[in-house]
Amino acid sequence: MDSGAGPAGPSGGRPGRRRFLGALGKAATAGALSATAACASPHPPERESADRTRPDATRKAPDSSAAHRPVREGRLFLGTYTSQEGGGKGIGLATYDETTGRVTGTGTITGVPDPSYLALHPSGRTLYAVDEREKGGVTAVALSPDGGHKVLGRRDTGGGAPCHLSVHPSGRWLLSANYLSGSVSVHPVDRSGALGERTDVVTHSTPPPGPGQDGPHAHQIVTAPDGRHVLAVDLGTDSVHTYRLDTEAGTLRRLSYATLRPGAGPRHLAFHPSGRFAYLADELDDTVVVCAYDPATGRLTPGEPQSTGSGATTNYPAQIVVTREGRFAFLANRGHNSVARYAVEGGGARLRLLDTVPVRGDFPRHLALSPSERLLFTANQKSDSVSVFRVDRRSGELRLAGKPFVAPVAVCALPVGEAGRTA
Image (cartoon, rainbow, N blue to C red; front, side, top):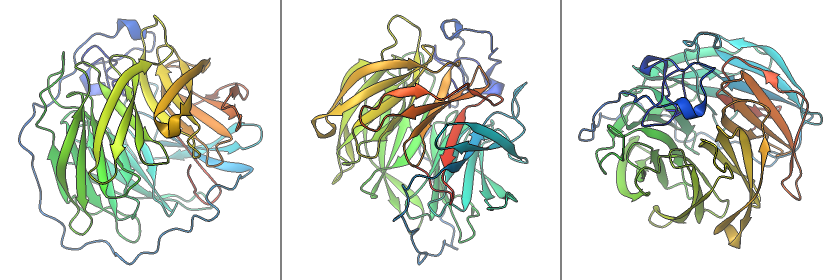
């Protein structure tokens, strides 16, 4: 989970994730975070039988022909911690103006506990949220154009404190990463968008934990652009695991894993649109790494660590995103409280740090581009705010669009278009 995630105290020298791991006061500085978070010890992979009732394989893929047309007004979903003092009451709802960047609150989806990370189904009709508590879960929410959103139900992940989730491009499977237990889970998605009982949960048992870690800490799980491989980033073991997803049974088979230097603490990665490179944010050693990726095998090969632009500031890099054309990358710096802007060069093989831009908030846990990529949003956890930047399409330059929007313990910002389109 967040090494700067939830309301918790620090883990392995980095900001802690969850409420139940220890309180993280808003007044504490990033440099003061030092407690160690408890987490499950690694154990052999646990697999569960596949659900006999599989989702409909004949479902049509969403029409993407208009996926990136600019819209004047979009919808914004906000993740928070409901169990933290001063936190949210559920998934925050807002709209944003594509021209001005102005955000307007419109309500809350209640009945969704600790929704610290959000993901949208490819159809745009269903929203998914983690339930980042000790007995972890994932929740599905049916979205309605008139705002009458309906919670479809919650499923256990079989692990502790899930902090990330993503939908397989087929729309048939939901993938989640359980931070405390160091495991990854799979749930089937039916035609309504609702979740079935999980079909698999796999715990990372190798490599051994990194310095100061007491076990694996799965922090992200995503499908590679080739569609054949699923990658899971593990902060606790300084590694990234490559799996093959059986798209009929919903089970994972590990193929390989890449290791980072000890103590790197990899958190999140983002792929270059070519599908041949990925950029990895290392939370604990405050670096970013360009990785070569082989679509044929799913093997990831990390390069040398690079600067996040934080200087001597205590800093925990978090989310990284890449523009659709692959020209720029943006990294959220928690502690330095900035967005680092990189030029992507060499067809994706190199990152060149251009500058850092203050977010005008505290602890930017998450960032996201709007579908048109005209706007960039940062969710600033400790200042209860969301900052919005205008993005210059030619230079990647960021300009703050007015005052940050007030949002209780904002830890995830998911901008979507009129029809639910995401970037």
